[in-house]
Length: 469
Image (tube, rainbow, N blue to C red; front, side, top):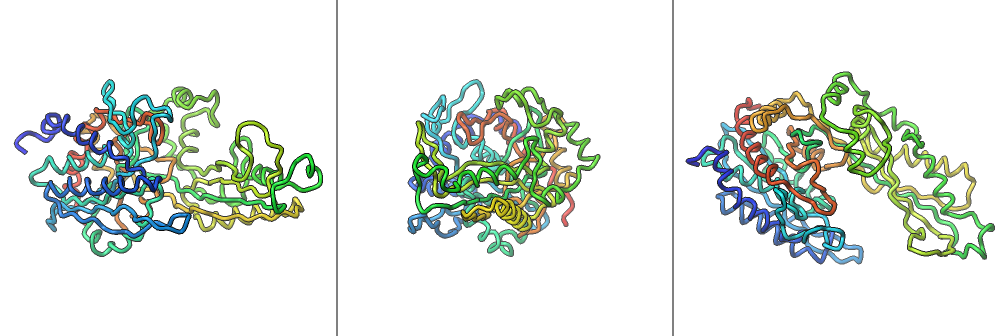
């Protein structure tokens, strides 16, 4: 590049926005099997873009997805790419995904979700922030260089929004090939907490449970049978009420005891973070939160477990009235995981507890508790050279010390990468705090997209100076 990298990025920003527009136009919704051809097309477009830049690109077949009706459908291939193979240089691997959440105009979007629309410097469209613009920012970063300061690999999937089917097995299979020379893994699939740039060093895991209570052989009329049968719904509500107290205390024995204590250093980190409780309240539209001070609130959002009851299958939930006694009801609830909880232990704790609570009711109904998801939490060392390099790059581009933050949600792939490859990982977000991921009017600000690209360029420079292990 004859120009300086930052000037090059500035002079190409219209082209970058147009590429994002082309990518957003592909309805790569991985949850809708009817949209699967779009997911395949999105992977092909990604591969073609990387190939055109001179990368060594592969489309890796990861098999098929079983559908509820017994049929199968092909999973979108995973794109891997390699730029440079100099053994004297560091090798980073960038992970991203190009599938998206569902979106329809009638869901309450102000613009067509798959037509990227620029309003006041914000680029509105499904997948703009999660995760198409960050993936493109990394691709543009590689494009800027004639001689990369580090070797760069990409692993880009098309099933992240529905649980990354097939990806874990692929990572295991390629551990000693594709990943063998990788030094560090970079994930840019998250956002800042405020207007201050941030680096993410932890995510919560999640254990998702079904609790099923079954009684009579079919639904009953509450007038004819009410008062004669012990109702499954009453049993279910009764045991759900024993999971968590009104003040948010988890009542399942052993859960709170497993949580790593909050250190003074961590408390200080939370204290330094830019976070406005009032604007947080107004953004979600509540008058009162579980905690009234910043440190408690952030700690319970990021580093303590929580129980959430999501819904009840089999219960009457339509409009109007229906005098039914449901014969079988299934509660869906989850417990966010934090260090040092272990999903296998949590499964036993929850199951044993609910069976013991249910036994005390002396009900003739049958209870069945199953754990559907058991995703572990992930936590990095903020003093690792990878994070020091991140802070230096942030300082260079944004001229501020970044917030060091954790995510309350789950990014299971981080833990998989760590467990399978043993490599160090950094999460480097460029998404804004108000990007509306998964909701209506998702956007990526032009500022974050363009300056984020400059951040990635600066970061590769910093990583190039780290000592080879």
